[in-house]
Length: 395
Ligand code: F6P
Image 1: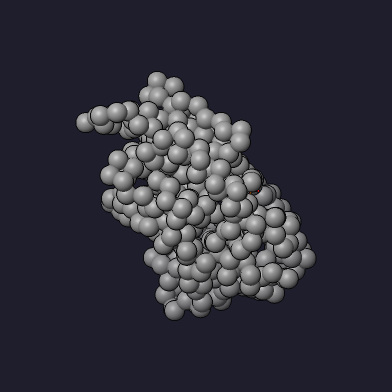
Image 2 (image 1 turned 120 degrees about the horizontal axis):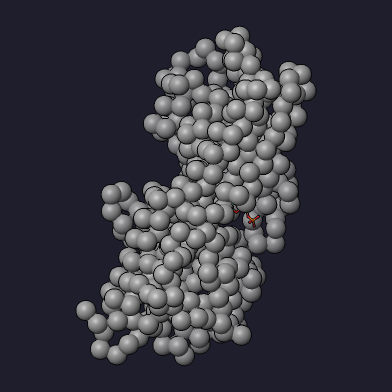
């Protein structure tokens, strides 16, 4: 079915990149073409909407061959001039002149819809566009998998695959040298990557923000393994795991100027402490941005392609202010406002955590002999990001 006059759909990628962005762009371009829309891609995220306005035509032809490519052909910016002038991460207050400039671009280009692909911060900007009356549709992306409205975000599976591969590699060298290896993974304030990679990669200890842990329990686990003849241990620690002192470990402790802490470094702290306490050789690997690069997994390609196609469908039906989400087995949508208001955290009582415990994986919170089926200690319920970070400001 074609529209009578050819209208345009715009698309942009904002915030940190992740595998699968190009698959969404391709999905949008191809689905838009099928419905008779022209498609344009704004460069460098929201920046492309304002002076100098920069965009490129996207067609079925020029998006062919990008499905499997990591990164984004449109480039991205972490907020840039759309940075909050006041307020915090989950409710940004952008300079009204910048917002007006973006509005003018959308109107002058006569966009039937603007597809904004981003994480919670970028989608908060999309929400403000929506409140201004712009025809916006959101597509969630993040390796962290921390958006509560969607069961999975594309990029997560690829990041987990990368972390799992790292664990597979660490496993053999840890075994050869009888060492404890600590792998620090990303995920911000959620432990999804650590949990899934820890299970998939045969981790022995998984430390995540949602489950309070102690060094005593971690060390007991290492000694327990030794008593069973296993002279190496693999520890996966989420960058946002909270130290027993109650502190987060951050590279830029308070804020990176974008309303977010730049987390990182906990792996070294954990490795050092274990080495000091047990006098065992311990090494740390920080996986970092490797988790965000490279080709998307099959799962992420399928999810991202569906997100792109459904975003066009929402535009076509003028369902603005909504964000695509995956509520298995279907792709659906929810108001963007709802989607960005709460983080999705690992449930300490979830079947994944229970299965890990049943296999003997330690979360650093229990005695090694304690039943894996006893009631878990604590769980951090889904919280707005700002509330979580505010709690740690000053640590
Ligand atoms: O949100 C995605 C993410 O990769 C987090 O896991 C990580 O904490 C952060 O972004 C890193 O951001 P940057 O690329 O700005 O260092």
